[in-house]
Image (cartoon, rainbow, N blue to C red; front, side):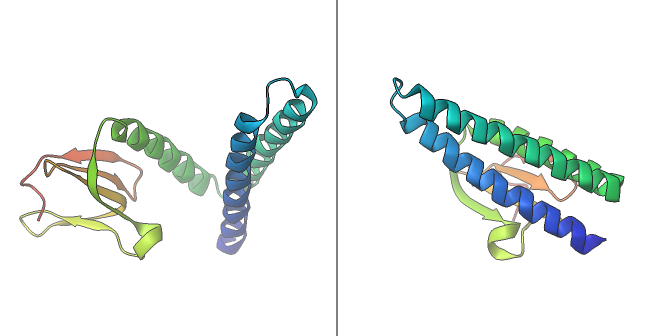
Length: 141
């Protein structure tokens, strides 16, 4: 069951990447080329539907895993919104290094999906539980 969900998540990831490429193509099409614009928009709409269908398959297999995915996606969006106004000097992701955590001055660690340090020493993190948190400078080792 876990392998099936992993496979579905991989499919979703590939479709999302392809969809982003199509969005970039859409922006580059001259506005007078209505036929090509309609074709690309239809392709993007189809990809969105494919993602919705794959998510529903995950939900049928394991509702709790589906809920966890949705929670993390919402937190990732919150993280993106918070990040718009920040200038990070250090970013670490679980995907990138296989290990991602912050360590507080008291030695406590929190495992994360993303950690990002600002120029002023403040940290913004996305936890494994799907929470976006901010910590002021001096709390993190």
